[in-house]
Figure (spheres, rainbow, N blue to C red):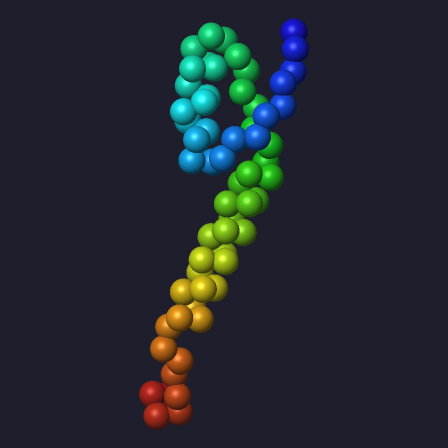
Length: 60
């Protein structure tokens, strides 16, 4: 048995994983991909918050 580590973009994961599963390859993903996705989501949320109109004292 041989282990082959490769990096695949999240958007291409399904495209690569399906044929490998069909021939009996065990596909193992690292938990860092989940952490990376959470960080990316947090950055998107921060960007949205910065783009929103800021409230002034008149709005309160």
